[in-house]
Length: 231
Image 1 (spheres, rainbow, N blue to C red):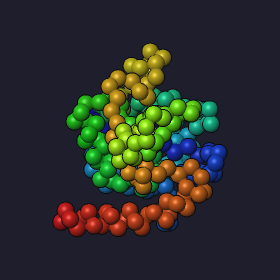
Image 2: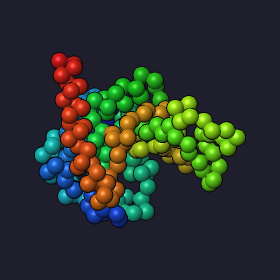
Image 3: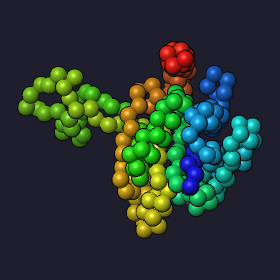
Image 4: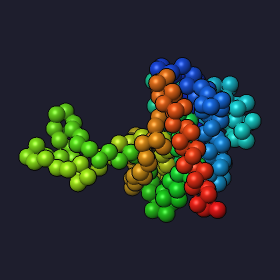
């Protein structure tokens, strides 16, 4: 069965208007996501998933399929579980990988590594995360340190901050959990895949977009250096 990339692109957004259509260095975020998925070379199909037909032309121009979800699944109240499930009912596959357009600094190589990790380890769900090796607390209580002693930060157990830059699911496990009215996002055997802070940067505000613009040249320099090493 096939391995699909699914790029969610809702037209409405609260903090940054029409964020999926915003441009980074002259390229719309959704177009960047499609190009990245195609460059990764690991997907049988790449799909743009939106309730709004305005995204259909971008998908066509970039060589991706366009899945128009029901309009109700594009509202602020719709959940990712709902639109991922709806997509899977229309596109049978072995795995689906949700690649967010609002994480434009995640590279094609990292996408390919994420997919390979998911398949090799046979996870049902894999979450991308940023390792935070610093003292963290929840509601005033230590998570990875103790009030009883001061620990050097390099000796702390890193906290796994989920970034959602990319997420993968085995379709059968997701569908089974959703139809049983269980949480499909974390169904079955769950794995975790680390990404760096730059790759895990997610655009939700104007400030986030400006930061991505500042970081993009650095990412491009890293990619060029990596390509030279592999040549």
